Image (cartoon, rainbow, N blue to C red; front, side):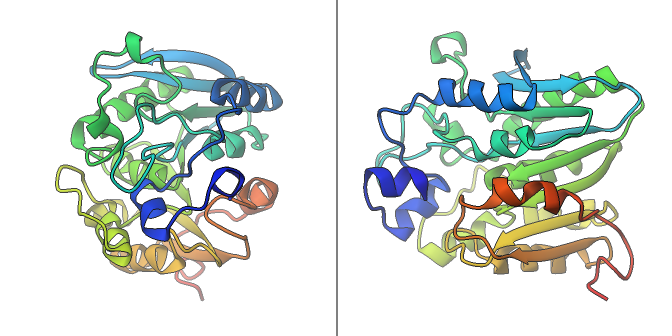
Amino acid sequence: MRDSIACRALSVAFVTLAITFTGCATLDPDVNADALAARGGLQRQIVDTHRFALTTFSRVSRPDKPLRIYIEGDGLAWLSRTEPSRNPTPRHAEGLALAAEDAAPNVVYLARPCQFTPMAGDPSCAIPYWTGKRFAPEVVESMNEAVSHFAAMARGQAVELVGYSGGGAIAVLIAAQRRDVASIRTVAGNLDDEYVNQLHGVSPMPQSQNAIDFARDVASIPQVHFSGAEDTIVPPSVAKRFVAATGATCAQALTVPVGSHEDGWTERWPALLDIAPVCGDMASGH
């Protein structure tokens, strides 16, 4: 865990609250994000939605090809077990790092509300939107608006959603509202926040939607949910529970030998992208 080990040790319960890691003061998140984006040829843009101004990075070079959209995790949500962050911008932006490794012609990265966007420029930003309301209906609606913004650039093409950590929940919640989603991939996805919070003895989030409650709504969409074998924050049991809730006809849970919730995914991502989400016997593990 690059951020937490470099700065201070964190308890498992605290880390779970945030599904994030405390960053070092010397690391500028925007500089890091711009470097990642440059590596993938992605351009920064602010997309205004009905509630939030969302920071995005994108490369749409073939409007006749599918659009792959990456959704960031929860970021720097908490500074301690009881003290929320004043800015949820992720230090290392694992979701952006994955997007930068994707060679597809149309790649979009969506930061979550209030990440990378100056607080002064977004009056809707408030602490609940990166703590207890981070999966609230209005958050999902705004993220879905951003998906539609980019889908219009590849009109009529399929949308492929990829969510990292808490972004996995957002991917499922968006897919449940759309008819153009061709696949879902999640990486260390928090697909059952109630279960994850129970695992670590932290408070539930009644103002948020829980992805697993929408499992049947996305059951016909091909999907792969990757979990890290050594991930103690969102363990593989989370993805397995979600896949079971879908009926396992089009969803599969795959456990990958990576070191933690954060580490190892970027290096493995090009190979993992070759595992296509499918329906039928392959999805059910046969």
